[in-house]
Image (tube, rainbow, N blue to C red; front, side, top):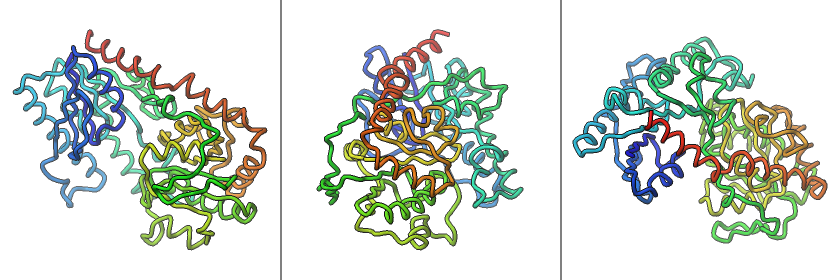
Length: 405
């Protein structure tokens, strides 16, 4: 079987699936990507595409993302022509939807099955965009969000099947297309993310030694942005540090905005929040982004882990924290509620209630032994429902079924 993966990044969501398929000597696996760094997967042939230009500055900003998608699709179409000349025609193409990678695949390979990966369909009302009253939308935003779904609509029309990682994310897709979509998460490596109650927060390679600290609150995100509740988190820990003089906070995140609106006055949210809430920097540790090998150990050493999100795409880090047996305080928002129940496998709290977040953190720090069942249930939730070892064969089976059809 010939399989072509398409994703702007590498290896991204397709890491384990591409590796699994490449282990079968009967398969040829090619991965098309914009990623040019020297990163490889065993048995996977990595090939590059690049748009011929950027969208024109004069293009209306509602459709600039669609122009970008067309340019990406055009680049992939040219890559497909090169692959055909090298005698590679895929039986199945797995494409991440939304960037345009797959919009011309049916023109390049008319007889090839297309399996598209759908993460998020935008809505101006009722989900992420209008969730936070501190960032109100104007009519321009409403029109831009609607127009911004154009590429996804082409992908929904073109694909033979689609997958979405959670029921919440699938529910945001237009109802008339949902019958084409299977809910199938990428899977969490539960053999990699597992609990260890003896793990200490001691990592000399990054200059962090909290091995003698009993109360450690952790926070993980790609960036420090409003979508993942960074402003609410800083306000909550400012109060917590006043209440708990022996508590430390470890933050694993880049000082950037991964999702959502810019911070006021063009500053970063870190600058804005630390100006509003000066913290004891001897007890607050900003670590930036970390290698997975250290990140997983930080989760194991956590006393309480915080995860906040708007009604948006659910983060891998949330599920990895559950798999690691963390005691999690999380926002009571729809993507979280799909996997977490308050008082069962996590403690849920209103996203905007910073005093409530602090209260929950203090309760969790005070009742560590009493709340051990939540840690056990958190781990069980992932092992029973989202383990990579169980979901990976389902992905492979779906691809094989598409090929046979």
